[in-house]
Length: 324
Image (cartoon, rainbow, N blue to C red; front, side, top):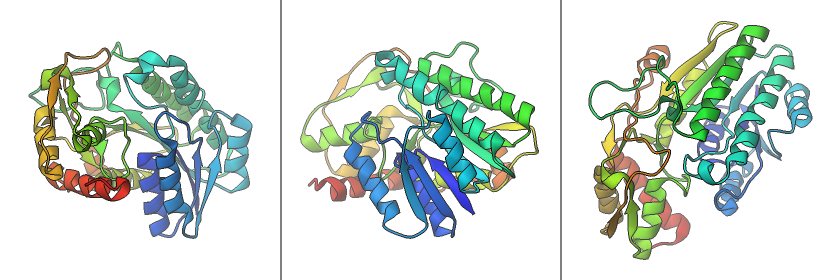
């Protein structure tokens, strides 16, 4: 079977494509290799995929509707994992039109391509925990039935809009879809704009780190291999026709920002000089997932604890960047 993975040069897409190849699938990767962060990292990820058989990369923008339709149609594609998007909450304050183009004008061509494909069986697409807004620490994690009425960032608004677009297409045209609300994903080959990655870069360079929210925020850190388990499990278990199923995918155990930093310091063997900053626009205090639906469907259960996962990331970082 040939499966399309959009965002295949991105952090999660790269790992998902590798897992599909490992189990014998043919994979077509789609990515525009934009410069939101260092394109050299995206090139390096792509090189690990093209080094073996069964994979080809299409350098293109997902908003190119005719090309996306032809790619699905001409290759007999029956399943798509749509991960390409403009990520980042804070960047949406600086460059809002990047989110309109990638997340809205990019999602629609994927929907159109899938609905016209003969025998199409399942679209899995990336949403975000950002749709939930804020949550105080304590109590249960977010459940899928409680997105925020008023998103706190444009990024969150575009992701919620994609869910609604998918719901309309599932109802109108019948093909099954699964939207995955990702919580904080980390690990080797990660995104340089993420806090653990940027902290690492600065700590290794002997520079101070800026800790927002006075260090009182918490996140549901989930290791990349566990995330891929959940994505593939969801792909292999499509919902019934005309259903747009929404699932959380995370670790379900929030970790305080200061605890994450302490764990990272241990993995790097270096102390961080911390500058405490207030909350930034669009940030939320805490996010953590109730993953009971995904567990019931696939047996999903994250296995990699933060200490082990950050140590693996630190080892990769030293190897990739030649850091001491």
